[in-house]
Length: 356
Ligand code: CDP
Ligand code: CDP
Image (cartoon, rainbow, N blue to C red; front, side, top):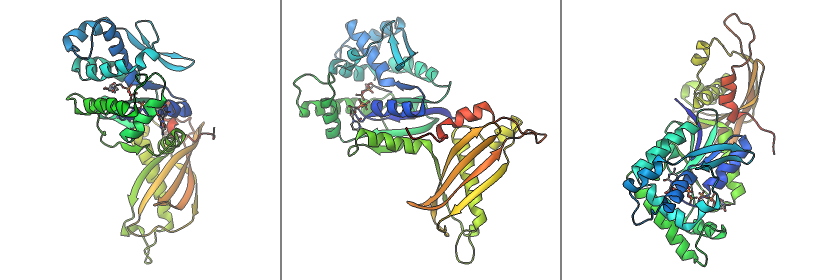
């Protein structure tokens, strides 16, 4: 099973919420900050007398049993609704942040929220950011990232955000509060902050926000897979046979579909077949025996019965081959039929977008 989730985990002030909301905006899909869900519990609990010194499962259980939490789609995206209200700045104070980390280590709190978080996915693609999204909540997420930055850079970013730090706090104090939270988050027994299996690590210490967002968009919108050229693919000169490039395109295509939970066999079971109707291939430089190739695949268009898939093959940074393949969708009696709706929806993340 593949969950159509773009999971972004990482430590405090690494840029998760800022990046996640802009990436979601670019792809036109919803975005959820799971940290806000933890903050909301801390905020409500603190109103009921829970603090960093006394927080326990016993005190939290009655809070959770009457807590109403949901996400509501609004003109400004998905808004967190807690007991009928839409809290925002209340969740961002340093006091709430400190209590959040403490209550987030309580298993009952995590279980309660994990059910809600899993319910939020399923309808289509979604961006979700937090600490354990790729590792615990969606180990089967289609795309996983771990966004980080040096503690010093993160402290500076927090200082620049109004209302997030105690007024008059020095950079050293903010750095210490962030480190304390990092320690608490990565050393707890349940769902500690860690790099999920298969996650791409991005260090944004030296990047402006726009640059980081650009890196994410680039990585998400194209499928990439690697292939090391075997001897069997080459001629006497050690150069890859021309015809193999089309096979490499096919390899990329198959992997791209698999990454969103589809296989040609699944489609055959649905009664549709997608043979190649047309292919183009521009050849710039040869691939050779033992080269490690990266095959990029994306969808140029998906309309009616036709899907056009773009491919580029790189060796390191060098573009070797570029092309496209048009697939026609047919049924068992070789009649053209519309591309399955669920296939288009699943692949939508790879659909080429107009430059904004
Ligand atoms: O914005 P910042 O990164 O500082 O924090 P946040 O994402 O709003 O999360 C606040 C706290 O919630 C974190 O320090 C964690 O203790 C907890 N959290 C968690 O345990 N698991 C998540 N998936 C998200 C947040
Ligand atoms: O959600 P998280 O706590 O990981 O971070 P955030 O609240 O999204 O980002 C912290 C601040 O760093 C925001 O004001 C961002 O604009 C800023 N920032 C960034 O996120 N990424 C950069 N490469 C540079 C700055």
